Image (cartoon, rainbow, N blue to C red):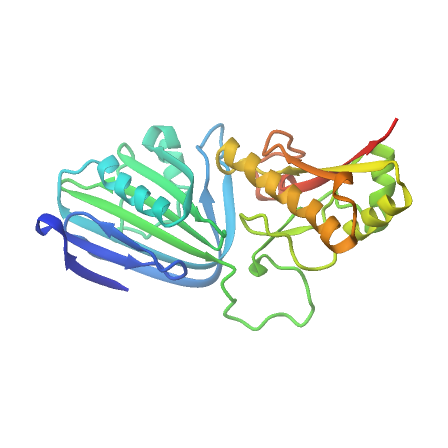
Amino acid sequence: MFRRRIGIFSTIWIALTLPVAAIELEFPGRPEVLGSAAEEAVSTDLPVGPWRDGNAPIETLEGRVTKRALTLGTTDLTTLQILAPLRTQLEKNGFDIRYECRDEVCGGFDFRFLLDLLPAPGFSVDIGNFRYLVAMAEEGNQWVALVISRGIETGLVHLTILEAGYPPATEPKLTPAPSTLDVEERSEGNAAPSEDVVAMLIAKGSVALDDLTFQIGSSALGPEDFSSLTDLAAFLEDTPAARIVFVGHTDTAGSLAANIALSRRRATAVADRLVESYGIDPARVTADGVGYLAPRASNATPNGRARNRRVEAMLLTEN
């Protein structure tokens, strides 16, 4: 929904109500809509790092995508002067800035063509003068990507809004299967069958709990009964000398500090589940997180990033 209003000093602003979070973004100048598009239940790739050595880290998301292209009318504002207040508005509304860059730092020509933008004349990018920002809502259910550039006498803004997990437009398949449209993250590859979790823990000292699911971008552990946790609880009951440290891991999207905090919260959620649902002594399960410092696959591909998002159980025994 668009509407215009007169702001301070008679500046005309345009307020855009985003679909899920219902926040409003205000754009300076005399904004006009150049083009727009919306698609239901599609996959979208959002770069979350620079183009280097032939690739860039990509966050692949599924859901409803809305695109808007705006011109700000005659203005001499720089791309940074346009972007900075938009960044502030997103942060004030609970969005986490996952990545931000400018033209050559982003990767220039190659990076620009990673971006799925409305075609000209709806939107055009000056390869030597643009800025990019991608942000995620606190609960991970909404992402916003901004591309700021300039024409000869005007500022240009491209806004992409993705509502993760938006219901698909078609009827679901009859065969039940896990789906990212359920707004879950699940580690892929190297998944240990549930009956092997304890055996691998004893043999190797640690094991990845690949059946766990979390809400995207959050530490909320799925509500279902996970076979790996059932097996670990039984093992702890049968082995009084054993203790377990849960260690959270992430992909490389976002800052190290944010990823360490997220990985630690996820590991803590797993330890809490054993205590609350299985009655395990809290002194026997602890949690920590290392963010993206211990990958088990390349973060250059979606599958690699999915494998790196995990919680591992590490066995400690009394001497």
